[in-house]
Length: 303
Ligand SMILES: *[C@@H]1O[C@H](CO)[C@@H](O)[C@H](O)[C@H]1NC(C)=O
Ligand SMILES: *[C@@H]1O[C@H](CO)[C@@H](O)[C@H](O)[C@H]1NC(C)=O
Image (cartoon, rainbow, N blue to C red; front, side, top):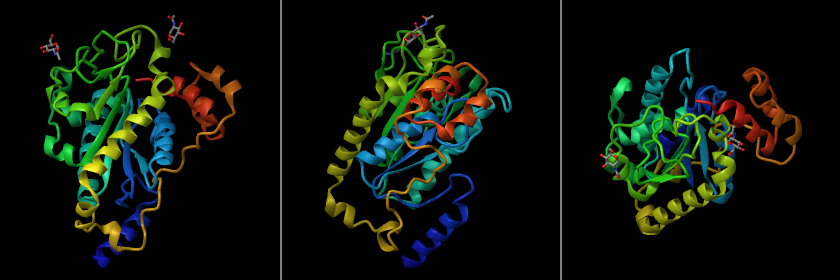
């Protein structure tokens, strides 16, 4: 067991500056965040939420899904397919390395499309049909799934939140596998969103974290706490894990650290960047606070 733990730590150290392939086990919740099209590598604007969850659930961590998140190079459908593979593998690898650690999946825009492919299957049409992960696997390992502005949104899915009454531009053929996951999944889409609601207002697509962030943090914390409560301390202690045997590897590690922490300030200036050149906006990010990140979302969380 100790050798396993040391091996894992070595693997973590070796990959620390590479992609998000760490198998360090979280003592709290581990979040996998799939960013929207055009956002810089890493978790994107949703990092703000993930950081709040880390504060709320001690020992939690998050990583950005390593996938292209592009519209044209590679093309959107290929980027989604790569994202599907990456997310499926990451969920499986983490669950195998950390059987006692719970996960959540957060997806924005294209990242929501990827997340629903892997968790619901589909979406059908030009995208073909991705196989969903088995329901048993999801129920034992993933406590919460949060989607924002999903282009594959289906208007009458039972887990929808927000004001949208319309399908997205790539509406999913069949969401029964997601509906079977019950109250662990929520999908936010508001009227007018160009992607999830087939609307004409780009701004709406960028407002989910601002509008619903507090609700989402509560939702994730509730889901996590009820899952931990059901499991109970005895059960937990009887299942040894790499993290419980070695060297305290798990203290609230955030595996992707190149995201600015959410602080106030940077409001003016940032807001005026919306709609401007993406690279210019991306260059501003490290200096931006919470308000700046929200404005950044306006620019970058485009499908
Ligand atoms: C949603 O609509 C589709 C097609 O109109 C229908 O087959 C499905 O049963 C509906 N689902 C719900 C939850 O109403
Ligand atoms: C787009 O949505 C935003 C946020 O709801 C709103 O403030 C704005 O007026 C809308 N723009 C148009 C053209 O409807």
